[in-house]
Length: 487
Image (cartoon, rainbow, N blue to C red; front, side, top):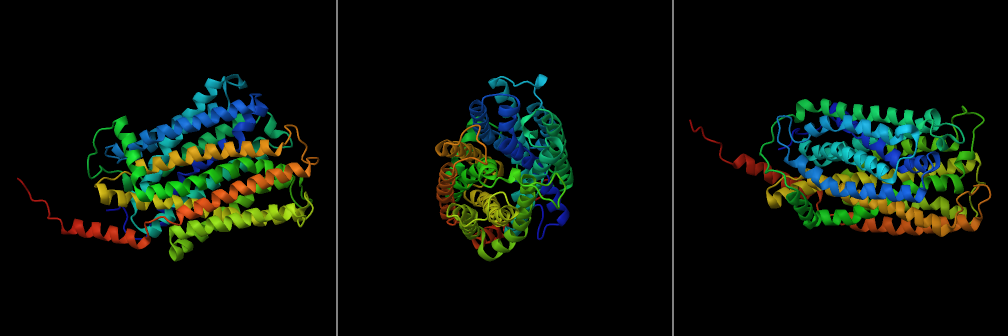
């Protein structure tokens, strides 16, 4: 029985989604700024930093199943998830501050950076896994689950894009702002406060709804059981199909995020574009996060009707293909010479137009995939008699984090393949270098998008099957004999 029957109140959707702001802050920091901060501002070797960040991600992926299982087995008067959401965010905030202001403002040792990066990732997982695991508990409704994930993704993107905009305009502004250490400490402190407020605020806002003893006392925790449950999750046919499609989608997302600065600077030259009619802080580069926000806002209003009319699997498959076509079209036009002159307002705004729709459908893929996991929870319970939200969502994080690391790795190989010089001037990069980068990116994107569409489109749990399973479970509970008084 879910905590809320029928349509969810708007207040609950906003409060639950607000907790994902912390994830958005983390994603922006790790995906866009951490590598350039430690390599260019602090002087660490970029290759070493990349290896350290990948190692931290893989360690965290292994820890996630333990956190998910611990969350599933937590038994308290505040329920299974709230104790984690109250305990983890304050240590996470302090760890986030340390990441962006290491002692003495000097580059830490390799092991020091690895330690703080792992700490941040593990504590963030201790917030995110319990938070997202609340979705199947709050509602069993197929459509309302999509709604909760819409609000989660919107909040996460708003948090991340807000931090990106602040970085470009307030904390590290100017032509070389990202290359000096001055603004990173303040930026990290502001982000830490936002992380703590979002997680604690979301937990407190849901307290009355979810703070109660679980219906069944779970068995005690063991590491062996934690990983055994993850292995069992991967034996669930629906989860295996989801993982195949999700892996491709997450790799594509990691690659797209990590290569975006290369494409925006060297291909589209957004950092050189200014507008006579706009304030000085608004450039082609600072406009980019605003464009991404518009695309996510479009997703928010698009994904619900798509799920209602097409279902989640077909929505994911169609969106993956649409995002692929729209996203690669500007690069095809650029290569054949049918694009406006680079560096002009016409070029930038045409690129922004394509980006809005490509990213909008790309995020629909991610929302659809994440929402599918909630249906797997009931299928697993129907087969085994056990609830395991934390294990399935930590399994999702395991797939996502390994895939993100692989996506960043692929970006490195694409840049190396293109033979882009380390000190290259965007205005003088040979066309052959840009063409090699674009073609390699396009091939990788096409393979990943088609793979994601193929597998996610074959997700076996339909809306009708899910609703029939919920109805059968409800009838079974109603038909069960009432407990008798033994006194």
